[in-house]
Length: 229
Image 1 (cartoon, rainbow, N blue to C red):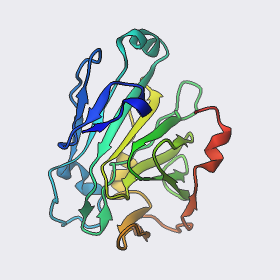
Image 2: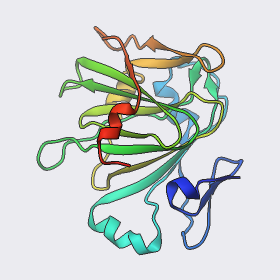
Image 3: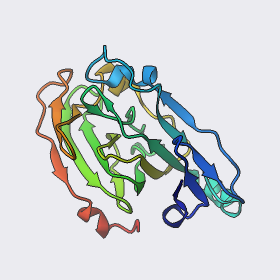
Image 4: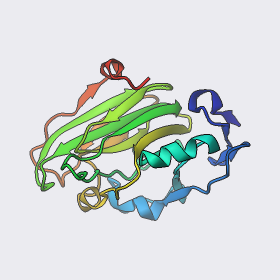
């Protein structure tokens, strides 16, 4: 068991089966599960054999009972995602990826993430409003306690580049539907994160994107100027 209470603020543990264990006063929530077949459209190799059936787990809408009301009033949601460490061919395990639609004022919803356990690479990308042309791709390396902001309009995935299970949390608005199809249509993000040996990775371009700019890899240092601690 891995105790997540100190960093998440919620009485939670992670079991060896990749499922969260809830302690009082939390009410147990069943996860939404992304299966291998759900994920197949976004893998580099469409004919790859499944290393496992359940690729990652999403626990949505977690809170202590005394905080549930104010969270709902503000139309936000706290989620936890559990991503096992494994390879799909040469690719590191990852989330499906999506964009956020615009709000009533025309600005796409942002999101804030935090690494609770493990080692992550957050891959974010910007396209034009018609999802026709790629503008830029950024890779952000993050460890336990690091916080990431997904800027409005950026598609995003989380990649487990470590040897341990990756656990992340996020705050996002609770009144929109994520846009998965633009990423599925191109069989993933603009690049795939490929295993090059122990603790090594590289980026393989996705040929379904044209005129790709180079991936910019940055640290989380620039996030520290925002009030998200």
